[in-house]
Image 1 (cartoon, rainbow, N blue to C red):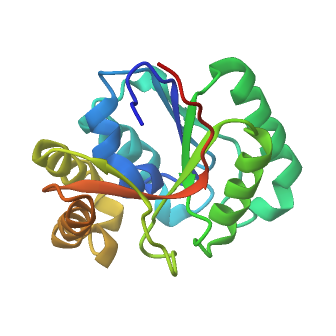
Image 2 (image 1 turned 180 degrees about the horizontal axis):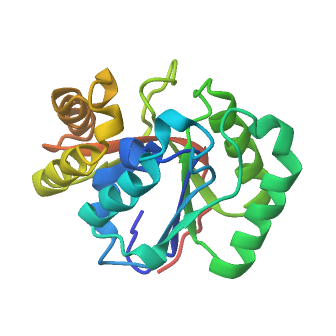
Length: 210
């Protein structure tokens, strides 16, 4: 699959999800095609997470994503299942406004209720469009990447630098730089290249053409 010229939509439930799941890919393609990064909850109702919205924008800046290509949704963390219809309608509006060719969202192997709900609604809202699932290691069980995208060592380093912007999460094991690098080395081994980002296939829509 060639990403060049595709309009790519990245969907995350919370600040940090997109960076953890596909930060290296975002850095790799941000200057090659049109992208939009959408996070459905800014976590600002939690007094312990007041800084994460600003950390998210700084993290995305490291990946090369300008502020105008970042959207923060209005939904409340941990209760996405109660907002299922509103999330569907939010996605339908995104589909109309951005007209994506390719979508990345949470893996269906993710057991977090917010992640799982938004993936189900994304599959409903974006019918007829390829949807790939990324791994957020802290909440995915049984994830295996069947879709692998080669990235460079610079992309890997930028992903690690982007995650380091989250001072709030600096002690969380899944922000460990060695873990982040080792995952992309493993995915690279599966793709027979030095580094890769891995995804599961939720839906592939394609055609044979010259």
